[in-house]
Length: 522
Image (cartoon, rainbow, N blue to C red; front, side, top):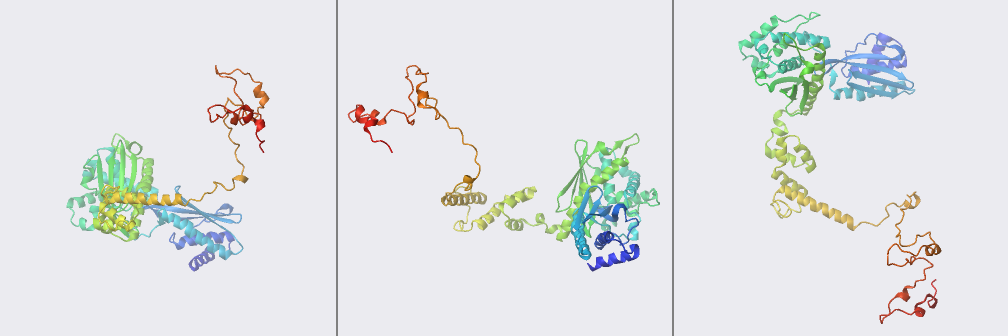
């Protein structure tokens, strides 16, 4: 907080003098981003825009390519809004509600800028542009035009090397060489170009570099390729064109002071170049490049237009360099080398590590690669899981049970898990308390009742006995007399006691069983 206040005070005193409250908040945003490494602290000219807007542009770097972080501040009523963007892909926004306390608003705004904007861009691979020394500043890629110029110079230098020119037979080779040049411009170095291998390299490679250096072309602003970058571009290994279906090159990249190896493979599938890049211990980055969209064929050979080259730069930045940088940072943050990764450990230690996972997480991990899948099927691992989850039930049997299983620890685990689930479901059914489904049902609106089913041989509830009796006595069934009304009808004269058979097999008498001789029902 003290550092930000000092930057704001110094900038106001030198550049602006006494300004409005919006200018103070805009300078607070500028100071917050300067304190985390963006820019050198010098306020640019023209930062005050029209209609009360303030704009800043900070040099940044994303996935090895230089870019600019654009920030725009404005006030709408009692809200101060800050927009930040890198190109058209990564955008962030934050805002604070202004109060009467100006010092508190400044403090809250600086915290919002660091948490909502700086952290968001950091998660998307946007970092402040590092300062470069004089040796590297000679061939630094400043903007897109400089990158295009450097690419053209590198391609012309490669074509001067006889081995590279002889390998460019198909469009796939030309496109793969273009990707190689872009990776070298982003800071990737071929593995065989390391210092310990350069000393033992043959004299032919040095002569190639000298020949390429002698034929380099000066840039539009007097800048040219450095010897180190030319050496990386022109030092493609002889094995990169050994197979038409698959090409591979190994690189060494430096991401945030961490050196990591990158394997790049190119596979041709149905007129498309599929690029696969992988950092040891990280996921595989995939990039699909249609040949017809990038490489054009002319009479003199193949060529990449400026529009296709710009599209190739954006695609490689998003699909290759971005994932490679994130994987390298994740690996570098752990501080572990390749020999300490999970796949590099011996199998007994891997089993003891995986024994701490649940079966669900173990199945997720087994679906990542074949090695972990075969490790998850190890019976010894399931033996550890059985002892961990069902220790009391298998304490007396040190071998896998064949009851309900297949004689393996995995089958025993599945059998014991099903038994436990059945016991728990039985306990729930035993102690279930009868309770209405919805205790508020009497007070809630209910749908109308369903229409009951009525037998057509009996009268409907709303028909009287006279209407039923006046109906035609003819029956729809031959040989059957008129149907009698329902027994539940109040005017029904049929007495069930009179019609019941007597003990001697005959019928009861009419007087004894007549309704008049019986007591009236209440």
